[in-house]
Image (cartoon, rainbow, N blue to C red):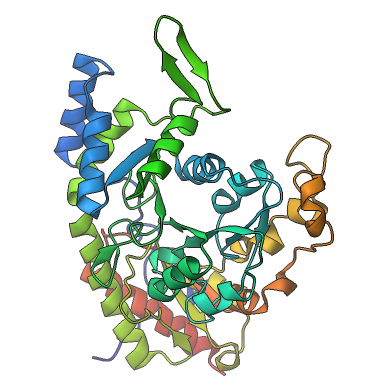
Length: 422
């Protein structure tokens, strides 16, 4: 079915009528759809106190739903990733491989613990790392791989898992944008050694705040619990406790656990709605809008669309990416590039190697990190990732989109690209 031409074909940015006006905007993530169960759970916590048992209940159910043995809930995903790195004693003298297209939360714990972040390049189609790109940057110092399922699109895990096992490297899945997504029938976060999740307010599985990890490895679960929940302390009879190692308070709250437990029960339905509506939009683009490339999903993978992203053929249009974005915005579609998400380029403290720990150049000035002193972080180290962000627009997706909303998005994309088509 061909996309309908708007009555006013002039772009809104040039004085025409927008496809979706400020009086009739496309839905956004907020306000969240919250089930009555979440309200009832919070009411019970407030009545019974903060020892009502929702924290262990949530951990048990979250582990069971995902097919994992152990769950430890923590303050947020940044804290979860930090806690894993710290608990596994990854520090000076070690490297951690992490996606170049991600967020500070994926790299913060690496540097806080004195290890060195290393960035592989990506698959141009997905913006995600692959076993091939990871293998190129593995060294004898590589202690862990943080595999980020960016956009909500799963990385090709079979080959990455095999590569990590071949080199005996800890594989951490960053599942902040992909809870309950599946890879060949298994849930994201359960294929590596440990998976890290986010329950922040805007995420698929919202607790207002929070995070958790899943693992089948009891040693990992115990070490994480000791560092991030017990702050390194162990009980000692007729004494109190002794702190057998340094730790931090990374605990999750009872109220948040009560809230997110209710949200967990509607998540799969929401994820399926995201898959259906994005599939409809991708089909319209493939059929009717040349020059735009919908998301590519590797075989056996899954995508639950934290972001919906489109790659733009720069030769197909007479305008640049930001000009295209401005025109889409004016029509009511908040699609824009995300250059700041290219970490080696946007995180300028990596360039100066300062401000991580006071006036030092931590962790690059640690004697055990002598090998890293000459590393120069920049977009040049990941040229394919740079090309990906320079030719991609994306916007947050919500399960609240109706079929009409999807139709209007297709109309907006067609209207703007027709105007700028080379």
